Image (cartoon, rainbow over all chains, first blue to last red; front, side, top):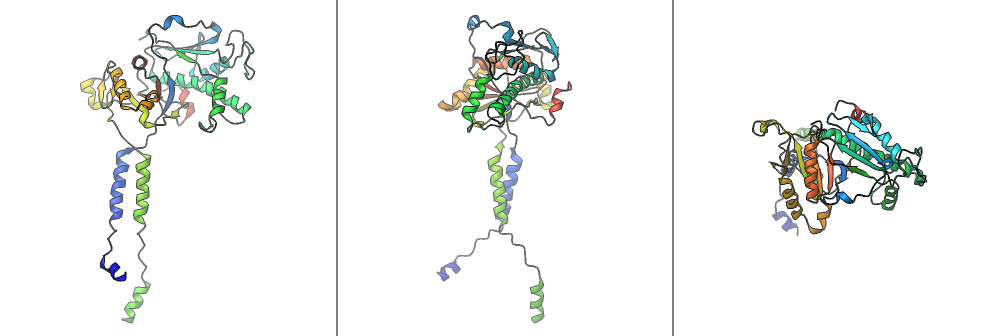
Amino acid sequence: MARNKRAIPEINAGSMADIAFLLLIFYLVTTTMDTDKGINRKLPPWDEDLEQDIPPIKERNIFTVLVNSNDQLLVEDEYLEISQLREKAMEFVDNNGDGSCTYCKGYKVSSSSDNPDKAVISLQNDRGTSYGMYVKVQNELVAAYEDLRDKYAEEEYGKSYRGMDADEDKDVIKEIKGAYPQKISEAEPLNIGG
Amino acid sequence: MAVIKKKKDKELPAVNTSALPDIVFMLLFFFMVATVMREVDLKVSVNKPQATEIQKLERKSLVTYIYAGSPRVKYQDKFGRAPRIQLNDAFASIDDLQAFVIQEREKKSEEDRPMMTMSIKADKSVKMGLISDIKLQLRKAQALKINYSSLQPKDVEALYSSEN
């Protein structure tokens, strides 16, 4: 054995580090670390003759948000700043006009929505609206629902909805989503102030 | 001879660098795993909008990207400054979008097809007319899961200022 060992010279591994460094630098340079994040949305399916049979929705259950080509907001026939939109939307969804929602904290205003299940947020923008503004509005509307779900989760389960694990709390998340279903409808954009 | 021997003993021993390749390899593997190769050469400038309610796109293989924005400076004398759509490595018109979606869907395996997500990476100054056209084409092509690519703002308060 001893003789055999002596016969094979040791491989010089001194330059291994250099080779590894070379590869490392290659990867450092060619790759980007950007993680893709964004607002997830679902589009309605395209059907040309679907337009006729939309079930009628009561006026009080619709929360209209209009954005014009100057990026100004008109919410329920009222001029609003973007910073007020979230609160207004939450008030609307949480209103509980018909009293059927036991967990809602709303003011039960007769001109606002019946319950979270019936409440629909209708968003319409102009073709001249900037994409940045559109994303901001979408963000606020999604945030309104998320905040409501957060509150609900805090009360029912004692933890925040946003912090829940998608796999672990699968059923809980489903239950909370059912309590405040996200109903944001988007109308075809207008073309007025191009 | 005795004097020389003494001198040698006093010398500092060389630092053992035999573990250096291991450390470097560890770093190398980290970068290999954690990073994604840049797939396309961006021809439009995209300054993403900011949003707080953002979710991570989980599986990269299911995501198809649509870029929209004004062409970069070096393409401006050829294509002008009006916002355009970029699919893969080339500028495209709105009519190419449906074919593109169908072609991308074909590439994915049968069970992954319903989960395909279209990520819209658009500049925040792009007008909604273009985005609406994209959305309409996506609906027609039955690609209904979309994601508006945005960045997490560093300062949430700045989101509400009228500046951006």
